[in-house]
Image 1 (cartoon, rainbow, N blue to C red):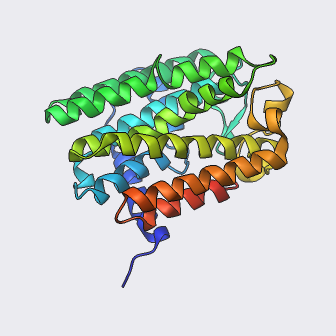
Image 2 (tube, rainbow, N blue to C red; image 1 turned 135 degrees about the vertical axis):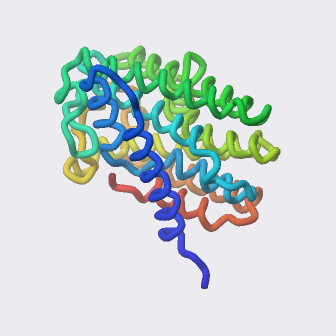
Length: 291
């Protein structure tokens, strides 16, 4: 019997959740408030789309995804640290994340900053551990570090702040999309391609477009989504005059842009991925999401 997209997603998701719980339980960190604040955000839920993409890509290439826990954990540590810092009063100033109080609301701003710092450092340790396995693992770890830092996500976050309240344009928006979101969506796909010895350029092109679709949808949801479903405060983009697709193009044209991006992703999958049902499901999940 053919397995469904939902069943396959659940398989990757549940394996990662168990891996993450064991990781948190094994953390030897003092004082206790630091470990508590780190694990509070790591275990607060979410779609785990980045580790799921990593596992699915490895699986598609015939690589045993259960042997690559370190890089999957590193991905989620980086993503989680970015969310903790993004919610801080100096950044997006959001008191809720995934339906729960943000880290700084529970533990205070200083502890939240330190929890984010610790998770980023932990990600580095995990990448170093993975890099010992082979040259390909070293290359994959290096790619992830590039995607996370000053030439990747952090640059996108910086641009997001820079262009708030300013008359910026399409090129500025595309820079934010490609760096703030695209880099860490492309990373798991490219890392898997590297580990499998496959074409990383194809994986990167698809990953960047998928990241663009993710952020287009995110901007739309901030304008028209349901706060209870999403588990965070909505309408903040307009309140803070953020540079988004909705600000530049309006909701109707932004919906068309998202549909066009989804179609482009599906075309890439059909062209380059033999076992494509899962990735097609991911595209439809991202485009149709309401959380």
